[in-house]
Image (cartoon, rainbow over all chains, first blue to last red; front, side):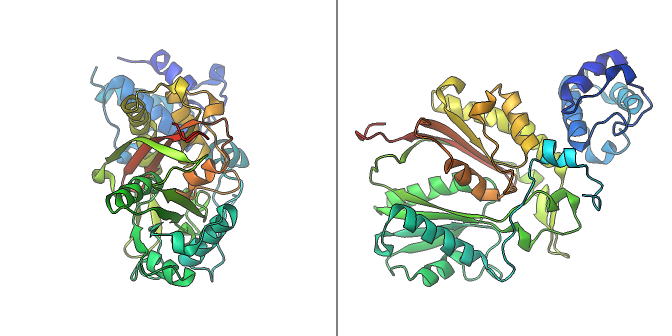
Length: 79
Length: 295
């Protein structure tokens, strides 16, 4: 099972804007964390590369906070 | 920006275009082509009779594309009846493809001089209410002089590489009903951030060159964030990978030749890479011809 600590570096590295990780709250939406659509696309690519699966466009809207990202990865990951 | 719910920072730090060029509504694609041609003629001084071949790269031709825009440009410029003229229908990969097509055509048919014009005014198809495209695209036209003779200070061709992924043809397309541009931002971003860095690496390998040996990487100016993402993926020094379209917008097949206009004489070995609509991509290395006629 992957957890918050596993995807924290992905969020940190992918974010083009500076976000305060001390305030990272699983339930805040990615937008509320200061991430925009391009940051989100970057995070999704990194997740796809790291966990070896494809995230279809129709699932993207529901992946709008850290909690949903973690659950989704645990459901679909191939490693 | 308020209308689209987009912040100024997003425009500045991500999209990167503070201004996008829009042609006058009464101007046709062929008018932009004629202006680009005349501007080039003024700069490098050639006669219309010197031109054996005229190519226009566009997916937004005059009217409905029949006749081909290059024929209209040929007529407006009064070029010779011995001058071949044809269009190439490609988007952001168009400049690289067209260079190869035109040079091959001229070499095969023993022609001396050709003009490659890029002109793809997206203002004809952009939906004013669509935030995915309205803040991105700009209108522009460029003209390049292509010769099979060696010309001091010009560029010689290295090896080219091309690719396509037709399964993603809807990623950027014109909707049948509305006749407006539709873009899937995520598809285009994913493709640019994953396929393109690998493709550039392949083209470097094909040319037996390393990143260090290339003076400038002229990437299609899709957006600031796209260029920066590819640059970071390849670990390119930022000064080798210019983003210079802040006041232009994404000018489709014109973005690379516009960047070439800003090169310095010290830039002797460059890599061009265009990618987009299709999805389609192409890259090549160009080497500056020195004053002794050696590569």
